[in-house]
Image 1 (cartoon, rainbow, N blue to C red):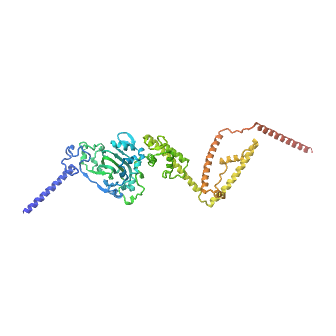
Image 2: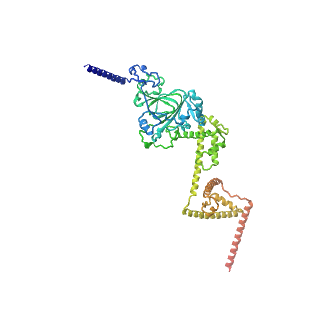
Image 3: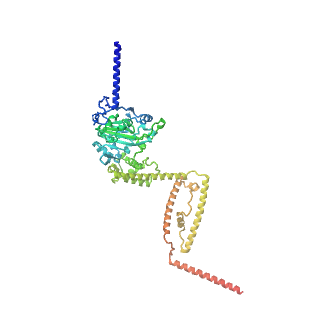
Length: 577
């Protein structure tokens, strides 16, 4: 009996405990009572004064229920990342994913940036200052004064940053939106932000603490003016619904990366000297297979991919050109014009399609040098870059783009000339040989006919002027005007073979001759047009010539008259007989 009573008492007690726990859980769900990170219960309910709620006027996310993130050492595969995290909107932490990266190894050293000449041609906009300064000046003087940098990654630094391996899938590479560089040398707290893109944040120097809120579970609890919330002193009287949200929090150290899903709310605290990069892409792909993520090795850094929301192509091209040419100063501290010309001439990347260096290349290179020689001391050096301002930099970018286009046009002309030579020196079939022989015959026939015309014209002129013109010169003038057929290429004849010139040399000579003839004909046509606008008149060189012509005419008339009279007399005698 006593045993039965004891068991009954235990069961009743357990039931009471269970029901009490259920009731407490029910009350908790009804009132959304928060827990701090230690899990200790708070007795304040949502019906109480919001100012009594734990965390009132404290930092954003300081108290409340906090969830842990999945953790990966290094980046997972693209398929794993997209299917398990990006597509279902779940954050994930990548431990030591960038420990071997170039920025992690080099960006912590200020001298690395100061050695790069491109830091003088890229600009940083100081927040709340309406002031632009060079990247070098920012690193040297302003970063330590509390000014932070929050803008697109400069072109010369994009070569340092690799595309995260978990993004090397065609679906995500094609959806890349933009990138961002954060630099701060002091503690800083960002506002609460929300983006319509997925984001991977990688810290290369220092550390950041990121607090996130799921838009799916708690989007309705976040006020519309969330950007105005004082993250240092969250006012629950003004924003009472914030008491109900739950957080994901993580401390991202140097070499680590964090994935933040699209539309999630997040806020960042940076501590001390911090350098981090954000890479964003549109949330379009929902699932992928291994076959969709066979990326080639051509993708190495951020300069090898395209970002849809980056700067305009023209601006980007100018930035690339200026970055490339100023990189010459990493090899030498200064250049004279001749040294710069030699550097351009040996640049296999810039002059990849150049066939032969000539006067036109020299002229373009001189113009490029004069543009870069900003202080006009006949030396291209860091002093020129140090004297730049944003207005001069914009002008230089446009001028350099035009000169680089001149290089490209000239190289294209040379390549086209090679193609013409190859076509002219290509093996000919029998039909082309027959055509060539006929062309030679036509040319000789035309040549002789025109020569005969020139001789007749010269004789007629001599009859008028009494002087024989220079037939050879007159014939040459007709040739220059294109009135005589062009002599066909006789590279296949025995005579040309005896000259000892190669087919290529003859073809190049022919192309050059054709161009010269074309220019000469254009000049002759212009001169002829001018002559037509004038009144044409025959000028008597000497008065004596006119008298001789008249005397000759009178003598001819007299002779004709005598002949006529003699014929008439003879006919009269015949009639009489």
